[in-house]
Image 1: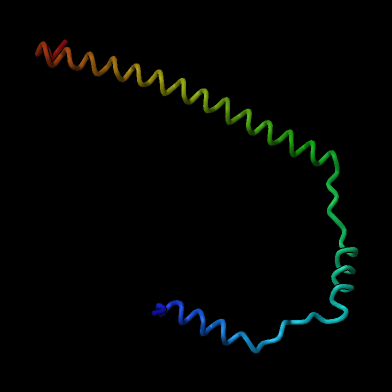
Image 2 (image 1 turned 90 degrees about the horizontal axis):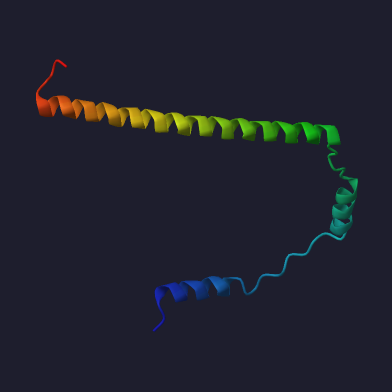
Length: 99
């Protein structure tokens, strides 16, 4: 016994049986060719390309520099934080709160 889904698919496919294929107009291909030939591509001058490449390289270099600087400052602040925690633990363990 066929499932409901298969019955539905068969009924939909059966409804398409009497339809004809779509046919393009006789001048459609010529019209498409005229459109393609008539289009002009954008021309980017070499100087604009060089300026864009230089700006991208400069931006990348600045990002790398700032990321390295941030990573170094995080390492320093982490080591300072660890030393502060150690000194706090010494004060608490010795109960010498006013040293």
